[in-house]
Image 1: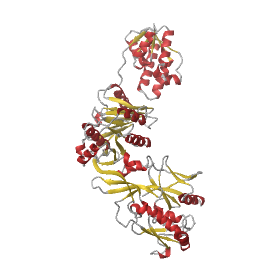
Image 2: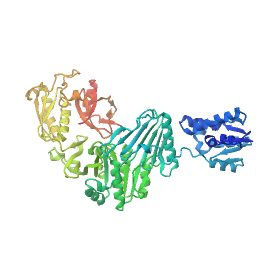
Image 3: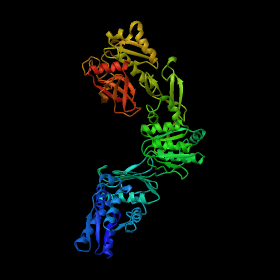
Image 4: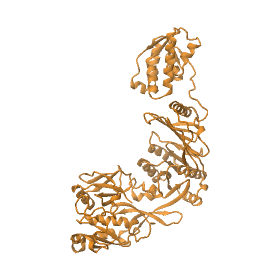
Length: 635
């Protein structure tokens, strides 16, 4: 009698089981090389099934040595393409061909393989598959207490957990015994198997070296080599389920959500309680007869069964958005909005009339809104997001109301400087705290609640000072100092030989600068400055070009902020700086430490300056003089 076991029968140990009970005594076991290839591939991938199958082959070899059975390996190993198409039946077809060619009985616990073999007239024996790694509960459940938010396990380290209340989490050792590689492999396999077999779980993502599992209210990331340097398990669960009534401003927020469909960003640092608040908002909207859906990757919001949770369709959230527009939800909870593509999807759905609630990582409330800058048109921001909720330590810390108005920005006085201004107001007090607008071709975010020092170093005054410095330095050859006087006046100190150049013929040049910035400028020599020329200057810069030293630029702070050195690329139309900053961030560009201009980082992490502009000419001049170009975050 000849028997051909397929991969499933070998992994489950069904051949040796029959040899031991005497039913296969004296048979010839024909093992296809295709089975060996599959087992080897699984073992190389770190799968326990591959190692179990290889152990079975060792046992069969021992039975052959003692004369209990005859053992032969036949056929060709499957090619890489065939192994990659194993799920489509390519390897199974090779095994069936060997069974038919050797007049053998095919032994399998794969029901599809069995039915195909029967249809082809092959003698086949079906055996029930072995339930591998089945557990009734999560194997790392023991590490969780009522105050445990997350558990962190890694090969060769002591188990740790984050425990405590929201805002007071402690990262602590929970077991003094280091976990072995064998124990970690056992836990990892059990978790993945449990997610596959239980109706309470599913595998959100499975790739080489990483599995993301959702089991009940636990989100578990299982990382393995070579993706990680060791087996690592990170399990996270919410430790609180809240309602909107549990938060400050609950009455006001309820009215705001029910008034009309909103665009809301829920922001905060990791672990602050953003998703918990988003879940409370989702439940509130659902209870008030709104059709609510979620967009999540992975799906881990703890919401009721009436709220359908959608993942990334085909791996892309834009596909999910297209589907949701057909479903016609009133509100969609988007958890989490991080990449440019996420913001674009969020914006598209909001502009389509869907109420949107997005969860965003941000260290300040205003940072959440700034992440839209550069990703969408500035004037569209209030239509996309009208409310920002900042969560800190599980509580609503700040709520901003976002509106737009055509006005003269705070700190400027000339009526002809009116422009569209995004006002970010404190929801509790109604007072504007930030303004966002285009200032001298740059998008700026200006705080309005700084210390009152006459506008010299806060809000628009600080930005105006930088712009005055840039404008004057573009024509002056020597050192330039700017001193602001109130909101609409400034004194510029230059070398005596630069006075005429800066003022221009008939005062035309300085009048042009005053008109564009809305600030009256008085031009004086350094000798007229209190303290004289030496104040804040070393008399010569490191490059030896006589344009000021460590005290030049911004109030002598150049030596403290070196910044990242960049190499500008000059194209036919632009001077391009590849900066190490995120899209929408505001940065300062300097040459040998001296301030040149402020810019907002665009897509691709680039700052582009149009050639022919005053900024570009100054930048190109600095490049020609081989000055070091650096970029630092704007303050």
